[in-house]
Amino acid sequence: MSGGHPMPQHKTPSFAFAVTTLLTIVALIAGGLIFFKLQLHLLMLTGWIVSAAFGKCLGFSYADLEAGAYELIMKAMGACLILMCVGALIGAWIAAGTVPVMIYVGLNIITPSLFLVTSLIVCSLTSLATGTSWGTIGTVGVALMGIGAGLGFTPGLTAASIICGSFFGDKMSPLSDTTNMAAAVNGVPLLRHVKHMFFTITPAYVITFILYAILGFQHSGDISSGQLTTILNGLDSHFRIGVIPALPMLLVLILLLRRSNPVVAITSGALFGVAIAVLHGGMDLSTAFNTMWGGYKGQFEDPFLAKLLNRGGVTSMLNILCLVILACGLGGMLKRMGVIDAALDPLARRADTGFKLVGATLIIGYGTLMLTAAIYFSIVMTGTLMAPIFRKNGFRPENCSRVVEDASTLGGPLVPWANNALFPMATLGVTYAEYVPWVFLLYLTPVVSLLYAFFNITMTRLTPEEMAEEKKADLRQDSLAAAEEKR
Image (cartoon, rainbow, N blue to C red; front, side, top):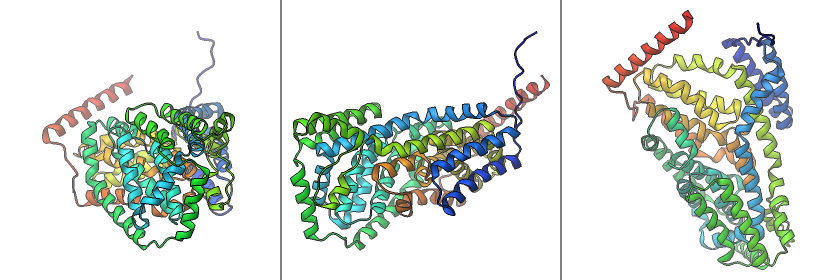
């Protein structure tokens, strides 16, 4: 007879219990932010305690839930490391003159009326080629923010064009991790998945392009030619404008195109920037190297340039890093309790038409993203729940994988505590409220998906032979489940 302690029995949460738990957490965070202006980090931490109280009712100890929190936090460590590396890169690139050179060139060649569409296209192409929205935002995006500021565009509008372009590429690139994951989870060949997404994102992208073109042509700019000359002269006097400072960006783009690890590529670019700052810019090694930690701190007569360029460093990312850890921990606790599955599964099973299936997939994708702040979990959870139901109702799985990316990949910047919102906020120096009204692509793509489902456009169906195989698989699964119950 074993002398060990009996394993604790955990209750399965009911639908009502799960919804009550989730609504309490949402009310705590939303109410604290909106009505009392409380700090989001502390609200997330309070959410840990509230989750533990609900978990106690299901037989979970705090140690059980803490283990779930750490499990999801560990999965976010890669993103946290990239955040730190990008902070280091921004500081080093300003010291090297990389960012100032790109701003200088952009202010000289980009017409203000075409700036937003140029930003959208440049970020789209860069992200498509490299497969990384974060790499695009942290390199090209930083320079475009400076150019936009120099041309008089509000930071939020510029950031929105960068975010739309970067996440378009992240969603559509065969090199993107999220694209590959969505295809794999739903059992769809990669290129078929990418091709199917083009049907819905193309009209959304065209409308976004037109809206940015209209906003660009309406923009008169708040910077006069005299002020623009002052900015250019300030850049020219503080940095050595030329080809050499641009080399670190070229290195990073080459490494990303060659599928190097993002941490390796970004850190290499930062170290190369330090070398340029020392050997070409004449900065002493200690000062140049330390910009990777504390950011660049230059003495500018122009307050605009001081605000624009005195930034970066790992320390600039610490606030966001804390929020990522707390948000992922809260999501991990809720996942361990099983309340997310219990709340969303009935919704998934009630969907029986193309429109209902797409709507349910969007709700589950956005819901899991809001509750866990983890894009990978959202993709896996949504695809795992919905792909079998799409097939059961005669729809091919690429219909599901397409919508999973609409919600999980493009939905990230719409959830203020998700990694894909926190990263651009920290890197581009904008708030959520500043950019969120202008990210047209992120709103339009799921709307197009819903319209296509309603009018049965590009909702590909399984063949009769495939449906017969699907029914056989369901019968086998039911037989296995019945045999398991008898045991």
